Image 1 (spheres, rainbow, N blue to C red):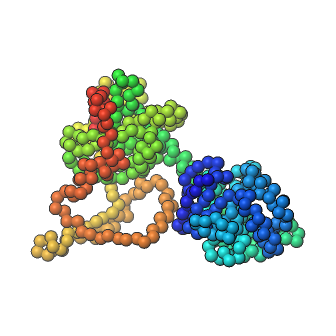
Image 2: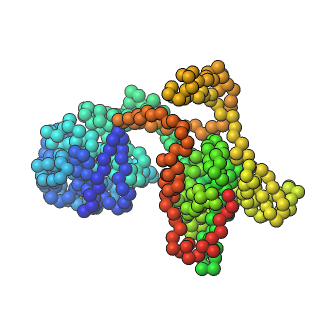
Image 3: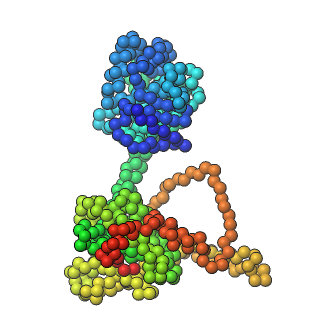
Length: 483
């Protein structure tokens, strides 16, 4: 039987993904261990259910030992139920350590992601000690990860204040109230407000899904863009085609400007031919490049330029080609229109040659050698930055101890700029045990540590050279897009 360790800090944690684990998994926490309800647990469970208090709290009927044993078999085989015994220990599973049980019920045939959860701490000595709390969190984490549950609900006796308090603590909403005598639902005091809050949460979930779809669309288009300029060798006679990272960043910027992808960008310093140049770079696009590398949809190659600077090259993988083949025209057309000569251009209208990225020492150009078409890219034209800063030089480096110049009188200029941020960010980051390191950097030349990391490639996701024996023996078959 497999053992999963799930830890949590301030919320629900995710366990390693694995399917069909309901019958062969134990869930280990910091205080408790959850074990599937088995035949050797029945005697202890039967003793628990003789207690009138537990029968009332769980709305259960007393059963004989034989009926309890048959019930255990039925529940074990029922795909709509998952029952675990809670052991108040992390290393043993003796009968004395049995504290209660926790259950999942999938009673909604129309929504399999909707699940009922309940918890019973049968042993009085374990109540109020965090056993039930951890068991609920572990069970919810297990359900989200392995059973694809998105929504939980529970049914609790109105007099069971400890359970009501536990689930309220984790933002469960009171949506239905049933009178025990009449057996009919009545309006809860805050039912309308709770339903409105639940509807708002569901609407937010739908918005998040829409945003996720947009992000996936941009990632697919980025992959298609790379596929147009690169290809892996299938046969020994084929050429390996790669694209350098600077050329890809130029094309990515052009895709943003033409609204082919929905990324933000901001100026950042890049080294081009041993010179620093400000470049309009999309950090979202770079993050998606990392994601495509992690998913093995792109290959990476580390090379040295003519000026002995490391440069990363990208190439679509065979796995990536399979994904691109499934993309529709709606994803391909905006990218294809961006990397080809405009239809109404005087230069060879109607041709579908790919525009190549060229650096002339001052600016980047998109060119087509066959037709003579050229247009300059504005990737190095930085926009107005909406902040004003003043230079700071340590006292020991100031000439004669004079104060440095202040630009405080220009602070009003910050309000004159326009924001180009398109995303509405609502992330909340919580930090525990934060340590701040404050230091002064004295500008005596290049930062050698940063330069060492750059030369080693450790500042990139592709940290080591991918030039293996295959490429060394076939170096003549490698084609790299210029710049």
